[in-house]
Image (cartoon, rainbow, N blue to C red):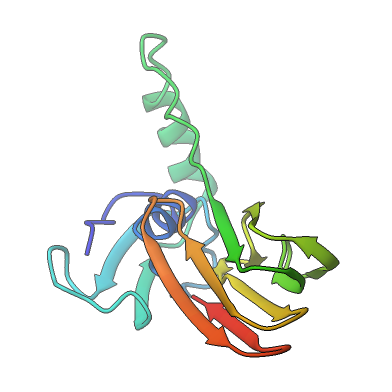
Length: 175
């Protein structure tokens, strides 16, 4: 588990998505926003944690005064902007024939390719919605043989893979 203390809610969200954590619960005080700082987290930094289990992040309330102080303190011109964070997931489907493929797209939407030539691959930016990333791909074989799917997280790790065999077999991968 990465140490999120002192990061903004948005920075913490990006760090957890890069580490392939999927379920993030933000407890915010009444005046807290995603630009507020993380004051505590569960599990603690350095803890081994299942990436499908909930991560709780507490954000401190923001006030105009503390925002103004932060803005003045953060004014050095020699500081470089942080590297942009990639949240691109890759879906792959392989098999001997064409397939009907359904997958999770940006914003929690679903997209479909009705007669995809295999092998097929699609990169999707930020599948899911709000601060919950989830990836899903399902494919139905147009004939016999083995059809397989794979989901590759932004980190480059394969987080789900599956195979099915037979005429018009369906295979599903999700993360």
